[in-house]
Length: 214
Image (cartoon, rainbow, N blue to C red; front, side, top):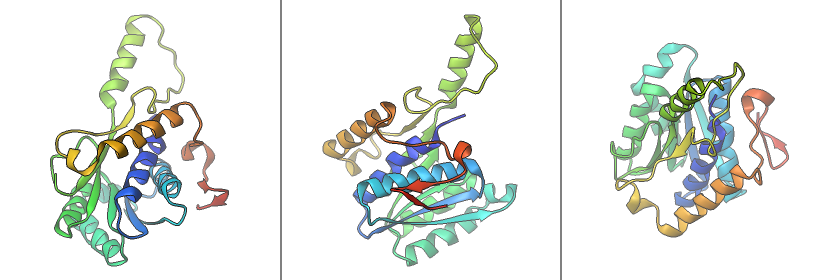
């Protein structure tokens, strides 16, 4: 499994550092533990940057159609923008594209997901929260070829390069060197367990600064 909460923490921190209001938004595909894990990390990162930060969140639907409904994601994004959210992070499969489009047309920042989507809207996408399935496959194949594969749960986070934020020529104008160093330092602190980011899929609760969010 991938430690989504680690990369989304960095995304939440970055979102608050680039926002104009106190509000940012999150849009999930289906309300499920893995997406709650994304959301919890995002909220924690936002609150780490500013304890007064407010994160609006919505889920598109309750079945597989939610992952392929960009029109609904577009509408939800516009609704969050009306409520003053000025950075949007959609984690919603193909529906994500609708949210990214709405953010770009509204001239606010957004954050891509799963793969590097920075190139889609270089004027508005801050970064992308990537899931490195290629690294997971490589590690599995290497373990198998060396005869050290074991049948147990394997967790890949920032340290194992299973998750990451995307930095390239497309988002370079949005993130100066000082802010990039802040993110790198936070990544190191997460790897060293100086920042507590338990898996929601294990705990079934999201606690931020001693307060249970959900």
